[in-house]
Amino acid sequence: MCGIVGYLGKKPASSIILNGLKGLEYRGYDSAGIATIEYGKLVISKRAGKVADLEKIISHANLHSTIGIGHTRWATHGEPNDINAHPHTDSSGTIALIHNGIIENYLTIKKKLLSDGYTFTSDTDSEVLAVFIGDIYNRTKDLELSVRLALNEIDGTFGIVVISTHEPDTLIAARRGSPIVLGIGDNEYIVASDASAIIEHTRQVIYLSDNEMAVINRDNYTTKTIANETTTGEIHEIEFDLQSIQKGNYEHFMLKEIYEQPSTFRDAMRGRLLVEEGNVKLGGLRNVADKLRNARRIIFLACGTSWHSALVGEYMIERLAQIPVEVEYASEFRYRSPIIYPDDVIIAISQSGETADTLAALREAKLKGATVLGIVNVVGSSIARETDAGIYSHAGPEIGVASTKAFTSQLAVLSLLALYLGRTRNVSSVEGKRIAEALLAIPEKIQYILEHAEQIHEIAKEYSNAQNFLYLGRGYNFPVALEGALKLKKK
Image (cartoon, rainbow, N blue to C red):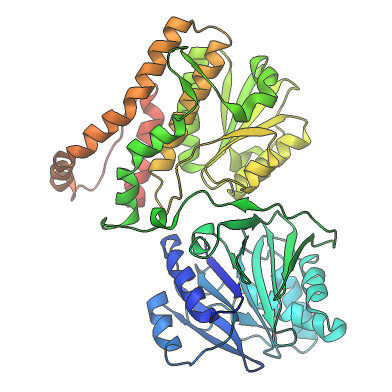
């Protein structure tokens, strides 16, 4: 996923944007760019390569503006090069845009704009959106209205931030299917695709919903739908701190997060596991306790690593609670006609809470009248807001691309859910206490394994040149084998 950072405040925007982009480098990217408004004109610097390469260019640009946008791109339309890098502008060079997502009908719009005499310099769908907004602005002379009208004509997904020399004290952000977070600081506003680019400046954030936009000025902001209906813009507080998104003494983030697992597994159970009672307290499910107790069937919706954790959850819940469980690949769920009964419970699992396919699947389930719950890590994420109830995994920010602590935290939560459901049905207090004590011992066992990592290093050296690996597992270990194979493929 591409990275987005926008700034409007009293400080030099370029340095804040660059630092934010560095914080998003873990996502992977092929090019980077930044646009600021300097003395009434757009100044754009962008190039293929790393943020460090962009920084070298900007260091000689003498940028002073307090408004700007920046982007790290992962190529979709058009090869990775300087021209296709973001930001993109309209034909007049007065409106600049950064964009995550895919505009599905960009060819239709581009054909119409070409017939109207517009030209294009890149191969991207994002430039088409920028030129389209500019075309509408030529008629409306209103930036907010132009963005809204353009987005109402767009098919596909987007997370965008727009600035213009016509309104040099305005920043406009909008989303559909691609996350956008608005950070509210002290006389400053920061927009990003991930809260990790914001935490250094403020903990107060608003997570935009799909088809919602934020119009930000120097001294205020408003949130509304792209249909121009005012929204509340609920403010959330970021729970993690700056240190948690830094590598510290570790070589890379994935290694850091592997070593965080004893504490994150413990955090997922903290305040929830009632060992002496052999039971579990899940406050986030209080309002749906009867639905869960009387569930005819549980259906998990997930993708990738979360799908593997859901498979483990299936085995645990069926064993302890004797409730039939199905695990659906979220990306396939909405493309057929799933049979959902009124007493089914649907549970969406996602680390970020923004997985597009999982979001689409849970919305399909809601349309069919299902009770929809969520297991997510990110507070205030789309899945957390769109489900009837749920459980946070409390794994903290996951910077490493290959999931580590998020997977084991999901397993911790699913273990708690299985015991919770089991105690309402078949599991005795004696058996519940035995399971609870076993769960409580897991962080220490993870720590023991990590303390003997040199043995793992030796095994890795021995087999590092192997051409093929075969992971075998049965029962609970079958989905763990799938997850192990996925990790090795990624690396």
